[in-house]
Length: 98
Image 1: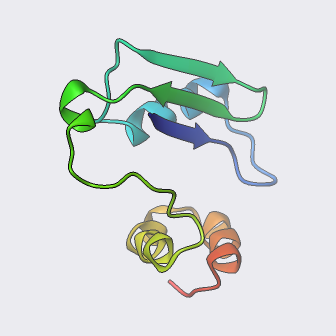
Image 2 (image 1 turned 90 degrees about the horizontal axis):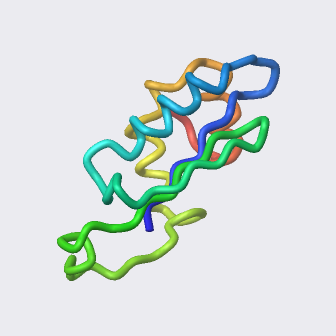
């Protein structure tokens, strides 16, 4: 299952349609759009999407990378795309510089 969660950073107001669009963008090119679920919590927008039959056949092991060096490396590659406040918050969370 693919899962994207999008929420505004503290002190910012982002409307639901913008969060929805950003969640869709995060899942662009992966999963089966015919089998996805949307959830609006009033704060964050979530989309969960089933894997395609081809993705199910991937030989790689599925795992959660949160808190690992791989997660930090991925963060560093995309950090410049974040707004400045989000960069500061993420830097503190990942304890790294960008």
